[in-house]
Length: 117
Image (cartoon, rainbow, N blue to C red; front, side):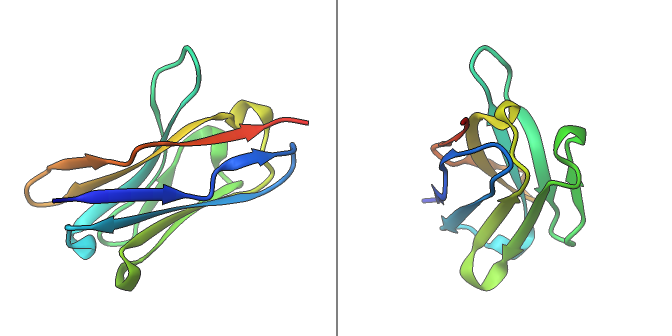
């Protein structure tokens, strides 16, 4: 059974930083693509950042230069370092992991990030 556990969200002032983590169990991390998505109230879920099994990364235009996705295969954990946070980054952030062979998708429970003064 695959489980994803997210941590690191919370309330931060504009310009501040947070680091999200997502630790997976029941899946071989090195043969998966990991991603972070977010969903703000009244909006659709959108891709924030993704890292492939080959360590290629891509980012939403709105977070380029501010957010960094990384992972530690030994710990089965993917991170999202978020710097220079803006109020418009406020959303529930979700971890996603996709097996590159079966294409099965797994989602975390979501974690709230609130950027406000």
